[in-house]
Image (tube, rainbow, N blue to C red):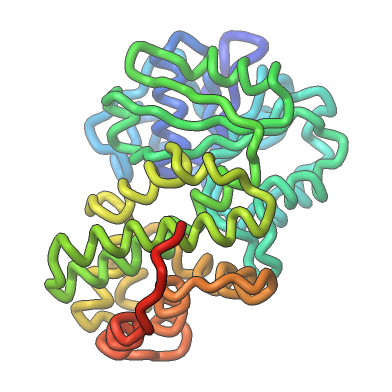
Length: 338
């Protein structure tokens, strides 16, 4: 594999579409970047083609972007680490490699989702597995990998309890077309990024059934209300959900077919099974597993989330989509609140 020319590159862990896009952006911004993936053949192909043809066709790798399949090399001396692996893999990955993470290194993650089985947020998993790492952050917001890789204008939120680390991330990510807003609300930013995937499945299903723009707008608005209710119950800040990591990401994933979760809803509305959906989309669909964890959290915190509940019923209780729609439309009229 290729090796880096400088001692302290920014290391991106995860060579899928999102990790590759962020690595490209950081390298385009003038930083030495080392992109790690766990499949040697895939990394060898990326190194030879200087492009991730599978996920980001025709986007060439900058010269400052190098690759490795060695986690020991990746974690040897990074400037800071950006993790972009699926949320369900965090605990096992960190358990296996905890001894390689230096105590003083900053760790950020760009994954969205909740831990399977526990419903824990990623920052909670990181704290449990890497208690010696004190500089941590999450980045989230309305971002499609292909658009970031093509340097289209993008804004995100970076949340951290360390202002110095969040500003370091902001400085490294910032460019003329990439803007970073700072926050200290890890709970709100992570919940917004997780729950929007569930709601995007609902929006995709509604569009797949031909319900139109009125329905889509209502689902987004009332979905935001659900997100805010659970978020505040879990300690998130109300204003976070009105920003990029909440409303911004929700609008994006509910309205554009680059969203895997929205496409999942569209396919389910066509009568496809979950097995067929997974095969057709070919990448992780975070909203499917997140739907179960969101409903567990809603019950735990006694929060009403009717849209998310019907998504859960369709995914896990074999509820026909038309029945789920009937339940939602048949709900008793009430005062509109957020």
